[in-house]
Image (cartoon, rainbow, N blue to C red; front, side, top):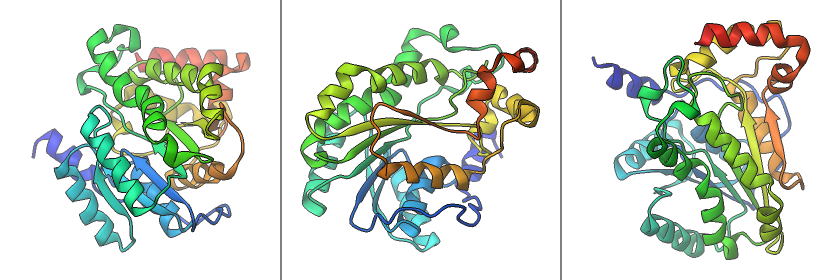
Length: 291
């Protein structure tokens, strides 16, 4: 079996999310769109699953192409919960227009938009490769699905989202060697926390925030050398390891908060620990080993 086929096989396996550790808000009258939920092992799929099964939200989960959407629908049916599925490639006008029509016809509104899509070329997920080392054409592909959609989709869905919320998910909020999305994450933060962007949404009663996740065990993150090394030092840094289930539930809990332009660090204190000068030697070892 090829490495790619093995990766896809493992990526479609659902993880055990454990028992709920917090009380989730009741979202039974709310509509949630999760952009980027192709893989059952990933954050987007499991956020949509928990939002539906534990918080009672109406959920639409998307994949970037029809084959992935079909697999997503089959997985949802096998798991025994209800959620709509749709194709949504955030770089294609026709997909965005079709999603706007679906939301209007079926629900007439959109309360929460969570964007978890990513596009990282595997050849850049290797030791020593950082955002600045990645060719500009590849960086632009990454921005196209991580940075630009939060601005574009809130504009396209603005009438459906009046008075609602908009969220952008950034996987692993730490700029480790080997993790090329780190630079795109910084650009995303600058956009969402920028006064001009926030003010433009304010006029519509829409809030935008970022949920910045720490490392968690998943098939996709296991391919990132920096994250693998990071896990070895979490205890020594004084941070707490969070499970995927904990991250998903704590992310959903932010939906009902009234903040705007905020970065929610759902990482067990890891980001703060990495920035603490007291941990400078540990951080240095971490970077050297990751390279």
